[in-house]
Image (tube, rainbow, N blue to C red):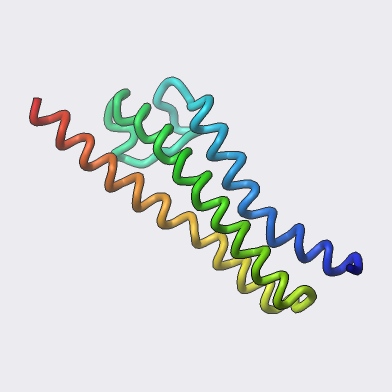
Length: 120
């Protein structure tokens, strides 16, 4: 394996590794109070402290899950196209877009959680 192939592999794994590490940090040590600088910050998440706490933990789990999928995708592409920078670039864009399902899942769970809380 040449140095170019190694760099390509590292780049493909980097996005997933960042998702996984950030997700694990958000799950294990979420920001305690609602803030505008760090954490999962959407209107629903910042509605109240219970929503904030839930969103930090749940989005952390989702980021770890999608980070692992993203790394698997990167490794699979690298095994087939170890030195094709055009394909690697397109995959990295796709990897970045894979955070969207984590956001959608978190927003849906937040909505369900907030509806359940309103009933009681």
